[in-house]
Structure formats: C-alpha cells, structure tokens
Length: 507
Image 1 (cartoon, helix red, strand yellow):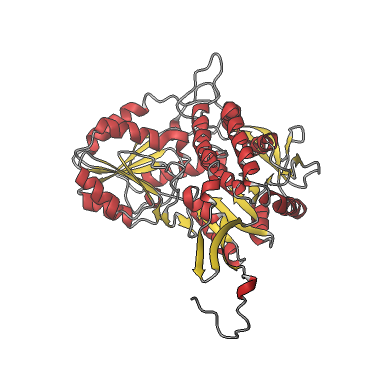
Image 2 (cartoon, one colour; image 1 turned 90 degrees about the horizontal axis):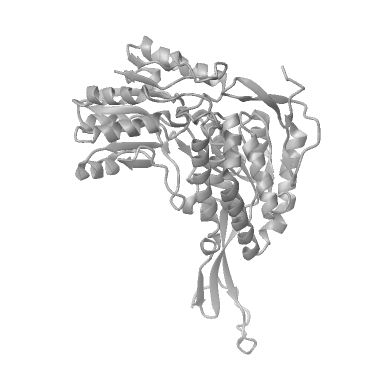
C-alpha cells in the first residue's frame, strides 16, 4: 500500500520535474532501516511518450551544437561532479545501502568515463582521401544516432548510467535514462547537475518505471538505440525485442565469476582479495567473485585465512555520522532480494555443501529493522548445485576444490556466463596460458575485479552480453555514432567531362 504522506519522486522531462500526479507508484526504502522513504512515480504511456518526445525535439539543436560548446558543457559537468560527489554518494547509500566510501568509489569510476568523453573531438574525426579518383575526394563523417534509451540496474545507480550517457551526449545524442525503481534519486541528482552545467533542456531525461517503461523504450519508433545492464534473462529479452524493432542494442547480463587460485599464490593476498571481491557492496555487483577454485592442497589454509577476515568485518548502516564509524558492509537492497539470497544458501546446504559462515545469522550494528544478510562462506560447493550454476548477486562466496589448472579452466569455460574471472599465481607462464585459454571477456591476473579503465571497454562473453558492442572505451563511441562516406567532385568549369551513361569508374 502506498503511503501518501511520503514524498513523490518524479520524472525529469525536458529540463524539469514532472508535475502530473502519477497513476502508479512504488515505495523506495532505506535498506538499513527497512522503512520506506518515498514513492517513485511509475511511468504510464503519456509520460513515456513525453520523455521520448522531449529528447527527439532536443536532438536537432544538440547534434548541431558546435563541438567546442558541447565539450565545454562536458567539462563543466565533470568539474561539478568531482566537487560534489559525496552529496551523490550519500544519496546512493540512503537508497541502495552500500557504505558511503563504496558509493564514492562507484562515482569515481563513472567519472573516468566522463573524463574520457571530454576527449570526444579527437575520436569524432573522420578520414579524408584527396583525389581518390581524378578530381574526386572521399571522406567520412561520424554522426549521432538520435534518441538513445539507457536502462540501468539498482546496484550501481550512478556508475552504470555514466558508462553510457557521457559518451552518448558528447557525440550529439539525446538520452532517456530509466533507472531502477529501487534507487531512483541518483539519476535525478545527475539530471540537475547536467542542467547546472548548461546542458539544454530535453537532452537528458529521467523516466522512472517498471516493465511498462522498459517496453515503451524498446518499442518506440523514435528511440534509435538501447543500452542495458542487468540480469541475463532481461538482457536477452531487451536484445531480442529492441533488435526486432530495428534498434542498435548493447545489453550486458549476469555473471558467475571465478577466482582460480594456484598453489604458488600468495594466500594472504588471495584471502584479502576474496573478501574484497566477494563481499564488497554486499556482493551486489556483476563483477563480484562468487566462486573460488582452489587447486589443492591450498583450500584448507585459504579457508582459514578467509574465515579469520570475515570475523573482523563490521556490518551496519553505511551512512557515517559524527558518532558512527563507517562499517565494512551495508544491507541488501531490498527484503525480497535478501530472502532470495538466503534461499541460495539453503539450496547449497541441501545439496551437501558445508556452510562454514552463515550470513543469515547476522546481527547488524544499531539497525535491527534493515535488510541484513552477512558474508557467507560455503565449502565443497557441488558444481551441480543451483548455488553454483546461477547468479546469486549477494555476499555468498563458494569454495570449489579442484585438482589441477586444467580442471579449473574447464569449469570456467563450460559455465553459462563469461563476464569476468581472475587467476592468482606467481607463475607468469601459467598466467599467460590462462589469459589465452579462458573464454571470458574480462580477466584479472592477481586482480580480483578486472573492470577495465575507461579508455578500454567493458563487456563479457557468452550469456553475459548480447549485442556486438561493449560499454564505454572506443566501442562506446562506435556504438553511439554511425559513419557516412562522402564522395565529392567539384568540377573545373574549363574541363567539363560531358555526358557518359556508363558505370562510373575510377581513373
């Protein structure tokens, strides 16, 4: 039931908040307290059409704005974001639950893409060939697509949209962003920042909603492209639906990321990084490590080190105060998701795994009503269990004991997903063999979460990505532009060639 006393979180359309009373809303929670803090408007067809119409109307003016003026606005946005990123971090913590330092880190990684986008004039340069044929020049130009839709998940309400919209806007597109209805306010803060930076109204719009809003973007004739990050079933649905409607699509899906630990690895480093990659952001990230493949005989020693570190983790409200030190890990984003994660722990136990540390028993510091589930460590996880094969998206780390490098590689390569993976070893030859043989899009060597820097591109293989383009980097610029080849001849009046009905030939 909607609490009408709570504030309504509205859409941002054509440079302003919508004033229309929503026909449907969904509650937004503070996950650490378990209480609703607002009601987000869920778009109906009229609001979907209004957001797309605003972006369409803004496109001719924005795409024809000079490169110099566009670049100045991107630079201004970058400066404002860098100055005030902790404002945004606190908003993320209040709706997602991740601790403020983690939220600030997310913003910093998104800021890298904004900084990449400031260099777009160089990337937008075309090619030119003079006198390709006698008196004929050939050159290429890159142009924006039009209105692009961005559909982002709850786990990174700032970073994931910033994987896409800085580049899309820089090269001349206009944007309709549909954030997750679980934590919608970060997108609105970014919209206000764009306006302050001087972005014209209608270039960046925020449309809240559920499947109706998603389908509205996928099926609307005026939307040229879709960028998406989320679960694999939804990524596949978005790719198939949008592609069928003639749109350009990049749809990044789920993951089941493995860390292969060789016997020669530094186990203290491995334990530290397993904790960081498995439990950071409560495991709610597609690049989290969820399975450690330990080549025997190191598993027992590694488990001991990981268990010692888990015992020292502090779980609690991620909002720091004068009297409250920031904990290591915050709550799960919602009660429904918390219960889903808990169900996978039970599945693993029922399938014969050993639950060494059970996060369902957690007691959080000073916040009893929140959506709590602590770090969980499972040993002897059967590779036939759904707790192994399916994405859990929570702070659950499974240990699978393997006999050899080859067995570990085979487990990774035969999995459904191919997002990210890591190897920990001091053997350069083994690391090089791993990077060549593994069938995964992003690989870490003694790096547990190999999210590429902004000038490379992010994306996985297999069921972790649908479409031909990765996010950001050069592939991001290619995705949001299309190329024209122009063949040009300016005739010398003194040398007119006369009529010739034959097929044109180069000479």
